[in-house]
Image 1 (tube, rainbow, N blue to C red):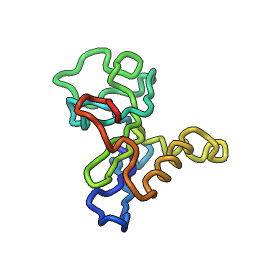
Image 2: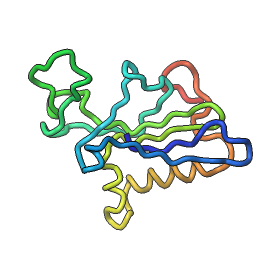
Image 3: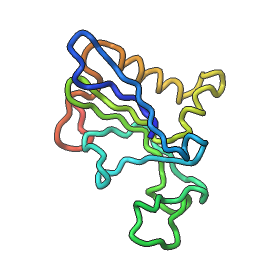
Image 4: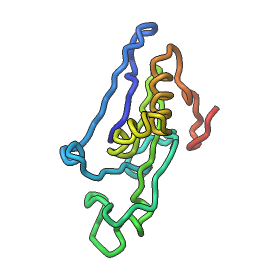
Length: 148
């Protein structure tokens, strides 16, 4: 899942940060990979969905780890679970994680001379991550998706 993380636990004032990109060997070869918001699979409950993809072709299929048994209809045009959710969540000590939700996100960045929505979102996230102080969404209630 491609993304950026601001490391929690950095000393106040030092703002040590980390950029972490994780991808499977298949994805690094250009394979199809989408990640979605799913509380049952461990998504933190205060995660915010920034954007989502849908209506994928039947080249996209549900991963076998998500199945008890195979049956018809587990393809992009039929299964609502096949989507890429761009997400953001905060962590203790001014930490946060931004996840693009699609391995192909990086391929969109240089399109149109980098004048596109994907590049703008990433630029906004990086700008927020390098500023001193708490990140947006630091304060949240226990009710899912309720910002203060």
